[in-house]
Image (cartoon, rainbow, N blue to C red):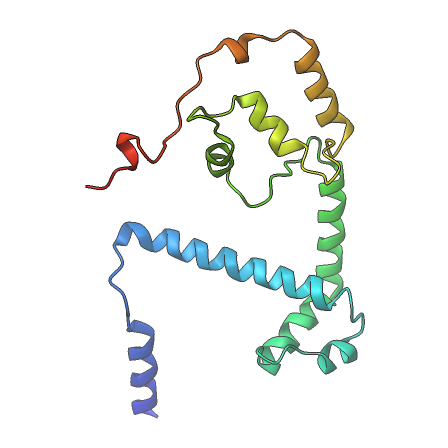
Length: 177
């Protein structure tokens, strides 16, 4: 018993990499987000397809241990989780001008859309992140009105404002040390 306890303690304390303290919090948050997203994907793939607990148990993903799968499915099928899911669905439906850029950061989007080393304006970024439906239209009336209003208002301030050059492969900031 004592030997097993010491082994577990050593495994918990084992570090494969030397990570600076300032990076530990980021890594923990990153891992937690990936875990949360993965559970969301599992729920989407399985609970929507297999509605009953028996069906979920019969169709368990082979890489997930049975005890963990039982815990997940029990929670997903509980009244508490269903109420929370419904409340979140209602809240999401009420959202005005939803961001449709996905998981890609605005900085990454701006770098991808930079033409001749010039970053897009704030208005261009707004349009890119609020018209991502397959047909190229805004996802809701509010976003559409905002885009049309800015285009028709003669708001030349954004187009006349100096644009920041983006970091290109030949720029000082992209060169190695």
